[in-house]
Length: 361
Image (cartoon, rainbow, N blue to C red):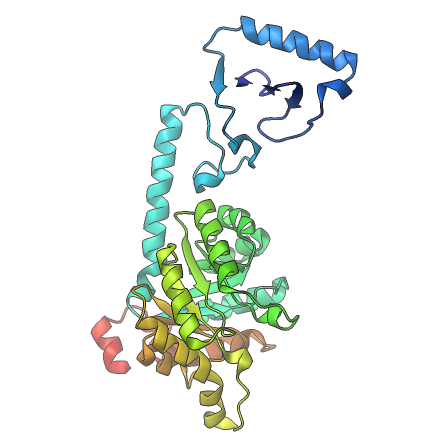
């Protein structure tokens, strides 16, 4: 049995012949066989055990030894099953938990609203772009140019920077589910498993099994946070569709497509822009007809091809290098505005009715 004292939060557990000392409020600070503990430590252990036995039952609570949650990090009480179970919750804590869950639910509705209206425009700074000046420029361009969401690297400090510059929902991208926790606590409202381009440059690709595993782990850690998952363009189109269907079953809220990295246009100008967008447009068309959740068409898009993505069945578009590779924030704003205007979404038409936007399209 585990015993928790409200006095020191020390953890003591007999495990047959091998006994271990667990310290520091649910984190394993020291664990060693009793045979190696000095006589002084043994004496301290004996005294603490004796003291525990004499304490009133209201001061300590037995916890099942079968639970492994004591080894998990002590995170925010509203981030799902990732947090270790507590022996008891005060009414105040229960009320706070219920309130937080309601807020998260409301936040998810807000984040998904533009996708449900098929008018989402997410501007992406880059999964491994930690340049604060560039990220600030991209976020500013998204805000001033008429985007509905902004996607940045999974870093708490970048999240704080972003939310200081815009009221748009902030999405963070990573392939490490545990990294999402700190970013969400810092204010991120959406998480993305994807934007794999930087990994392709290193010869790293992701299998369907790996992506499903990352999705399950993320949902376990953050069950109430909006989750978008990118389906790799390295899969054949039928396999992309199958993976999208499985991701929907696992609880993904949005499927993101890609393909610009594998496209090498043979033409310049408008023809070249259409060629470059062909793989992601094909994926958006096929996947949107196989799943019920929103599909975001991303990678290789421009003002020329963004409207095509919506017509193909996407609920939104994601744009990265067309904006984040520009060196001037004014040019970035102009590019975002051009893309937003291309399918009737601009800074001046955010409040347009669905019928008006349909006429514009």
